[in-house]
Image (cartoon, rainbow, N blue to C red; front, top):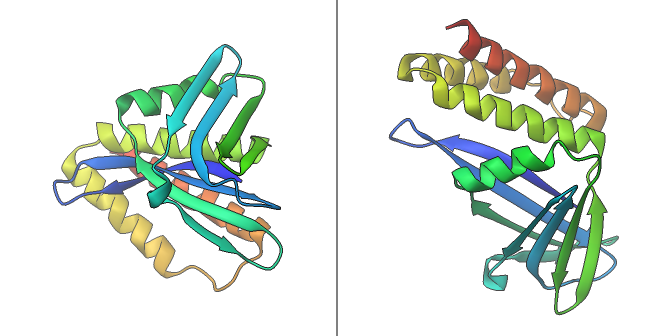
Length: 168
């Protein structure tokens, strides 16, 4: 299970932040509420259950959704990163599943939020250059890396993307 921010660059060259949510376990929870507890912070999101995809992969039941975030959502994500422990509760009519955010997940969230801030602060020309470099990196990616290699490759790509934004 996880919540991961990602951003896309629209036709107006303004990035939009989204949050992808995956809840997995030994049953469906029929996800309709996400509660995040982190130190003094508690955030609750209500999800329209009709926007949730569900499936079973032979081992686990999973529920997947995403939603567009605004500046307030981005700020609370930044706020929770300072907490010692972050616990996400996925709940609905089928019960609940708790997930403690791992250090790797925390770092991935931090990297995406940092890249988003740099991208927003960059000029349209620098944004185009960074995206062009990103596309070149993705085009030359090796096929089917292991999960560990995939994490390292994505970290390298994000760092290269951020370097382009910082240099300009």
